[in-house]
Length: 356
Ligand SMILES: [Zn+2]
Image 1 (tube, helix red, strand yellow):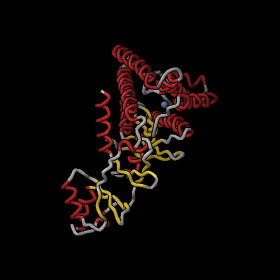
Image 2 (image 1 turned 180 degrees about the vertical axis):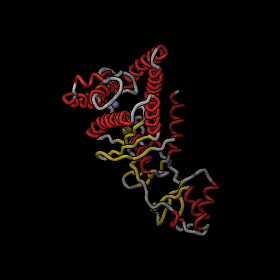
Image 3 (image 1 turned 90 degrees about the vertical axis):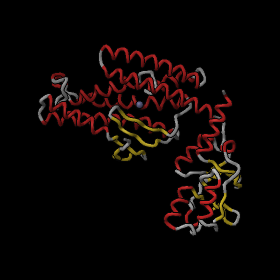
Image 4 (image 1 turned 135 degrees about the vertical axis):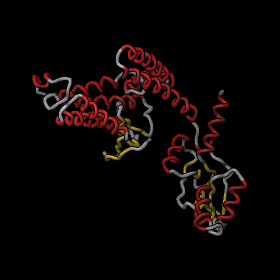
């Protein structure tokens, strides 16, 4: 369901189109044919959709490139039929940074609209309104950009306006409170959209639900962040490191896997860590090389070391980025312990239980 097509890279940011986009194009073409449009008009409306998504991409790039200025990376930009999503690796926490990152998107649409303005041939453009064609193409694109700017400035998460609102509130109060207020306003607006939608445009119901869920997700996200704030890898790590010796065989590793709860082992040689061996690697080695194979031939020699003083949030991000099952936690070149996703989860469960 998550299949997406890679279309290119701008300033190091990969851009994808979600497969459901094809459905959108098919739906438009189908409706155009049903309405009895000529081929040239169908081509115009498809070109129009692609142009809109070009503008949406530029909008998302506005967010991403502004975030880059504050050293926040963007994982990728994905275009969905309902709009674009730029997944930033983190959300800027300083009010000023969040404000500029949020405003940059709608600002791009305003700039596009202004740039199109001199090229619009007014009398012709106004004539054929309703159906996009050669004469009113630019005017239609201009008004779409204005709509995008206004729509995104609705002060409700996950719209950009919600972030602008929270950033402005954050100047006056702490972030959790600012989020709660901004999310509350968003949910009231969302209900308003749903009610309006039932009386008129069903699309508003859809937007309302979207905003309502967005507000909920934002509050939840912030709560889970509050849970890990101030926590370092030293607090979370397992001090008892499950060890194997490089000279042992896969049979020994399999036995240790069965004997205990550990799923990933640190492989030592001459008193130093030289690799890691996960349960998947053990199983694979058993199948491919047999149980007499050496651990050293099956292990992952690429170790991920993280500093014990690193925050849990950054540590988790590094761990996920590396796609490794476990990270070695060291301080001043001494191995102190290991961290994997499972023991982080346990730590969070214990901490949230304590807070209650
Ligand atoms: Zn935006």
